[in-house]
Amino acid sequence: MSIKLSAISLSCVLCVAIAQDATKVQEPEFIGTFTVLDASGVLQPLERQATQSQVKTKMMGYRGGTATRIITGTRSPVRFPAGQKLEFVVKLDTKGQDPSLFVHLAPLVVEKHQREFIIAKAGAFGRNARSTANDTLIATNVAKYGEQSYRIVPIDLLAPGEYAIGSTGGLAFCFGVDPR
Image (cartoon, rainbow, N blue to C red; front, side):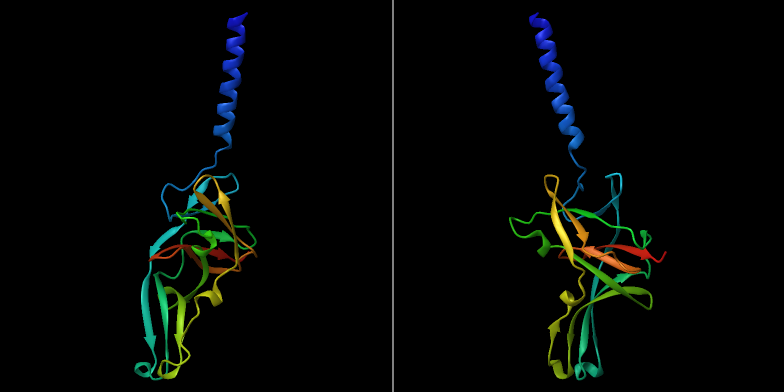
């Protein structure tokens, strides 16, 4: 009888352990890597691009200028149809700070052979210089996902165009939204 009881106890412990593994979500392997969460709960990579800073001035700065982040190429190979709800996952080390401070989702402007995001503007002679990065950022909800990661969901569906998501630093994770 005690052998049957031991076998039943062991079966219960194994079932609990298997159930816990089954509910564990997939997380990105590395800190700072943004991925998209597909409908089946699998993380898919986004286009990973290094960004470059560029300052454009008008008449050597006398008429103002802009500071931008530049991404090579005009179109991301990672595409989604308009109307699809997108969810992104990133592993972050926030050190107890609000994770939404580290996540930036922005539309990109296609200009010549590149995509860009304006981060600051200055008027004539440097007057009225101000950061414009927050003016165009897309509002998102950020929530805990797994043990060390966060799920980022845009509040509104994204319009057709090119986009980049990232945190501070010189990396951008890019994708595009196609019209229906």
